[in-house]
Length: 307
Image (cartoon, rainbow, N blue to C red; front, top):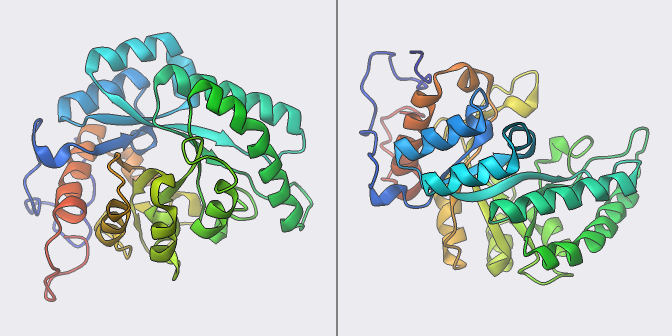
């Protein structure tokens, strides 16, 4: 089996901490986003999480459709897993707004059937050929206003996810947690919340104030690291927690201070991690979770990043 690369650690060196086993209380809030092991189908990721003792999983729409929504629900119940998030709705800046809204309603229906804690909303970038950010953000606001009553009716929480500014043009015209909150605050916190994704917000000098402001609106906390160098496809630049520059534990403490007790979902897009054995990926995720997220120890100045 091909192990997940451990930065600055010789390939034969033991892991910095033992892999936690099922029943370890430190895993009680750990969720694996399916994208982290994207080679696996829905049944495989559910089975893998259950065997590793992870209590929750974040699912993606296309794999769920391939498996079948009803079958996915049965598998989740059999495994005793909760759904930390359903990915994804959004892209409300699309030229065909009615079609985008219809697709989002289908996503809301799926999230309701899955019992997902939230439907993650990646709101969309600039329409093709446009440079009008103000108009694009107005489209997003109008789309959320259209969808919120339906989401409330179905008992689904929309979770607006701000993305790092480098994705503003093509993926999300909401670039900061403050912008996401400005929009979310027009609706009840039970219906429209926000995602705090460490990869996207770690750099923001106002992020701690905005987390405090968010309070009960935090619908999802996602963890991964900012690593360098960035790959040619910047979408695939996420790293394992502990391999990069983000203060994931500090952000987790800030989020918990607001009263958030939900899942800590690991979502990583990285070609090397995708090519590794998914079993090893989950084991590394669990180790890094206890070492760098829930039970971090003060850094040793003599150590190298990523151990």
